[in-house]
Image 1 (spheres, rainbow, N blue to C red):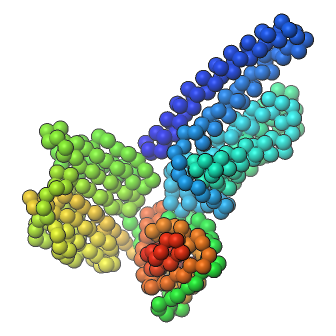
Image 2 (image 1 turned 135 degrees about the vertical axis):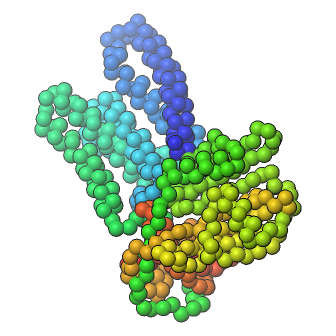
Length: 473
């Protein structure tokens, strides 16, 4: 199970306990108030069934306030005004957590839309309830910024309001059915039906694409006004064709089987696993050797992994030959292609690298870095060699066009998304460009332009960045 689900489950449990506590306090207060009113002014006694929606509403508001403000750790001040950024980020990286965040932001306000019309008749007007939902969301986003409890996000405002609107529609659908008002029911179905159709259309169209999405695809256009650009090379202005590669994309099950196989090779069981977007983290302690721990991080769909043996953490570096190191890596399940070039990087570190090396129908690219201790054990492995096969030839944009898109802000950035570019008046030196490949959400390797940047910001000084621009037309 994705580790984010554990976080959500924890919030639900804590929220349920809080809701019960708030409901108990409010119910006790209402009963005391009703008893007092019954004695002093019985003609003003409010029926209990009219008070129940109020109790439920304020109890749920307590949960929302706790989950969005009180239970959140301080994370600095920030504001995101890029509409649909959360959607595009989740789509581009096939992020489970990203999609869950979008869905939860909608679902969190559905009960509010359900309860408001039950609380007071004025909320049976759609525009009043929609405005109330938007206002509550705006209060939450503002509080998160002021109290440094999160980022004020326009996407949260929109999804919260949508959730409130859906809740209102559900209430009016139930009310129309109870009154046998089929015309009113039909009107209330329009928005939920539209949301379902649009959502289904998005996922169907994405599934029909020839290739998947890249994490390097921009989720919004960066504001680059005021940037002084310096280019240290002359970009190629010719459009060209470039290969797209397929691969045996690793699935989550494949990643789990790989970890189990490595555990057998090591003689341990990786019982502790944490699931994140596109990777699984494992840790296993050997009972017979106190303090001996193996760490493993397996990624998918890209077939890469990181491995650490802490028993050799404090040992001196060791010296091994290429043949012995290949054998020891194979014992861990790390297959190194015969064509990979071997390099002794010094201080016990070794590298096997492939630069788009073709072997029959296969193409190998990437590197394996490892560290060897003085007992000749492999203590660290960073495995990143990709085995690909030619799938098709596609037209790509030129370096000059990619550079133009970069200057217009259509890129994603490695090494800090845009923090160093967030102010006006910086200078950016573009020192070079590489033509690299990145794995998309369907397991294809697409070409990407990787621009090397030197960014000079008034407060941050000079920083290295890599700006990525997808190359396919």
